[in-house]
View (cartoon, helix red, strand yellow):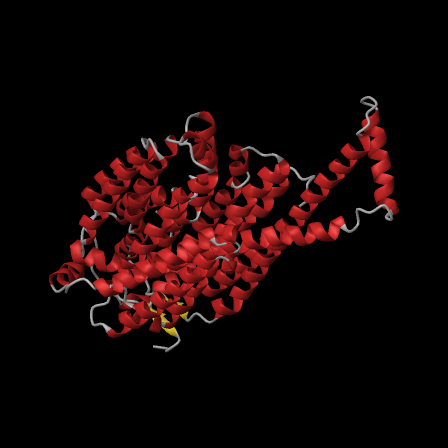
Length: 530
C-alpha cells in the first residue's frame, strides 16, 4: 500500500441494524434545526430589542451567548458521547434544545432570553459532530461521500435559508416563531433517534473503560473559547485593542489556550484529543475547513447587510437574495455524492475553491443599479463551490482516523469551521467600517468648488430641485444629496474590497488542498444516492 494513500476500508466492520438512510434522516433533522439557529435570529434582532425594551447592542448578546456555549461544547462532544453513551447524549441534547427553544420563544425579558439561548447553544453544540460521526460510521466506506453529501445539506444550506425564513416569520408573525418552529422538528427528531440510532460495540467498550472527566482541561477550554468568541463578537464595536477590557480578554484567551493545548497533550485522558492532528489529512482538512468557515459565514453576513443598507431590501428579500446559493449547494452535493468514488477528491476540492474565488470576485463587481438577478448568478456559483468543497473535504479529512476517534475528530472539525466563521465575520465587518471611511475621505476630496465636474452636477441638481418650488435652501439640499450619494458609493467600494479579500482567501486554499493525501476507497458497489 502506498504511503501516500489512506485506506478507507481499514476501519471497523460494524454495521447498524437499520437502513443508513433512516439514520441519516434522523440525525440530519436535529443538525438542520441547530445550524438554522446560528443565523435565523440575525434578521430579527431589531424586533427582539424593541419588543423586550433593550438596545440593539444589548440584543446582540442573543447571538453571542448562543455561539459561546455552542463553541465550548463542540470539541468535548466525542468525550461526552463516550462517557454518557452517544445515543443517550444525543437524545438529551435534542430534548434540551427543544425545551430551550420553547423558553426562548416565551421569554418575557432579555435576560430570560439570553439564559435560554445559553442552554440552547450548549445543547446544540453536540448535534453537528455527533450527526457527522454517526453518518460516517453508518454508511459503508465506499458510500461515505454520500453520507457527507447528506450532512452538507444541513451545514451549508441551513445558514443560507436561516435569514430568509427568519425574515419571513418576523415580518409576517413574530420574532418568537423563529424559536417555536424548532419544537415540532425536535420532537420528530427525538422519536426517530429513539427508533433507529444505536451505539456501536466499540463505544460501549470505551464507555466501560472511561475514566474521570478532565476538569482542568475543560476549564481552560471554556475560558479560551468563551473569551475568544466575546472578543470576536464585540471587538469591532469597541475599536479592538484600544479598549482596555479587550486587551485583558485577549491576554486571558491566549494564556488559557496555551494551557489547554499543553494539558490536552500531556494528560492520559484528554477531553479533546489533539493528537489526532498528527494525521496529515486531518490537520490539513481542519485548516481548510476553517477558511471555508471564513468565506461561508462572511458572505452570508455581508450580502444581507449590503442589499438592506444600500438597496433598500426588506429583511425577507435580503434573505431571498441568498436563496440561489442553497439551490447551487443542493445541486453540487447530489453531483459530488455520485462521483466522489470515481474522481480524485482533491480535484473536486481545488475546483470548488477556484469557483469560490471566481464567484466572490463577481460579487466585488456589483453596483447600485443591479437587480436581484445580478446577485443570483454569483450566489448559485458560490453554492456549487461550497458543495464541491465540503463533501470531499469532510470525507478526506476523516478518512485516516479509526471509528473510535471519529467523535473527537468531528468535534474539532466543526469547532474550527465555526471559529473560522467568527474570525471571518469580525475581519470583514472591521474592514467594511474602516474601508468605508477611507473611501469616503477619498471621495470627499473631490467634492470641491474647484472641481468642475462637481460644480456642473451641483448646479444641475439645484435646477432640478428648483422645479419643486423656490427655496432658500436649494443649494444646501443639493449638497446634502450629493454627500449622501458619496457615502453610499464609499460603502459600496468597501463591500467590494471585502469580496475581493474573500476571493484571495479562496485562492490561497488551493495549494493547501493539494497537500492532502490521495484518498483510496475500498472496492465496493458504485456510489450513488439510492
